[in-house]
Image 1 (tube, one colour):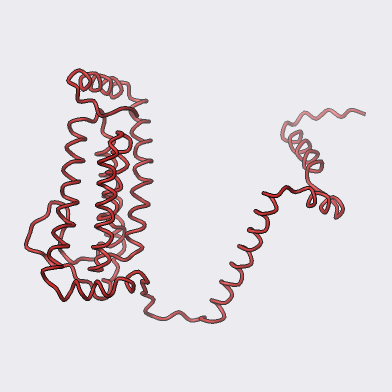
Image 2 (cartoon, rainbow, N blue to C red):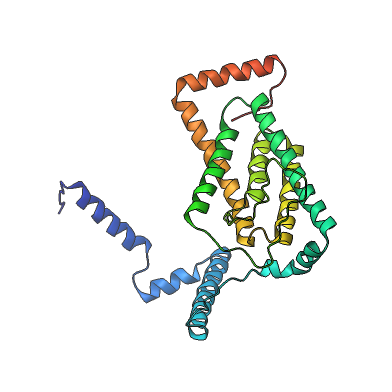
Length: 274
């Protein structure tokens, strides 16, 4: 006997329940049969899932049983401990510390000048400028919202040489790192422009800044890592936003096309795509 159901939601529920009963095992025999029919990749993933679940359970319960009351001072940075010999050497040798500070500052200053010059001359839209403003804007808000205490053995002296980007004021603007994040923002832009040698220089600057920040403890390790990750993703997000606005606002899109044609005419076209 055929039953007519006028309510669409009821139809969907009934269809879903029937399909669910057909595809999902409903008794122990079917469950065993389904398990035996698993392929090798599924068995490997299922085994790994079981191991991860067990490890999570053991780790969390051991933490609760072994250390129910956290200490008042929870600061510990294992990478700072690894770099402690370099930190002591950095603090004890003024010539070396000045050289490292100047070298790091000049490296990031050069990258700063190259990136903004290339954006101003070769770019056809506001993507790079928007990404850097978004990166530093969010960083400023976070540092004004939460203040962190300085790491132990922090030593970031003024080396006697001015810098455009690096400020030698020992404040508490730690999270997240602009020293390591800004070069990654530049790297993303240079990759999109297919200027891979400049992207390589940006990676080099990131490595230099990472070592310098660990040596002088101007940042926690988490600040450096999150700065790199955040810069990568904020560049992707900002790129999408700028593209959305240019697609929606016809005037901007027309202006972009005119700029691109003009750059091609004078042979300064770096912007090889969106």
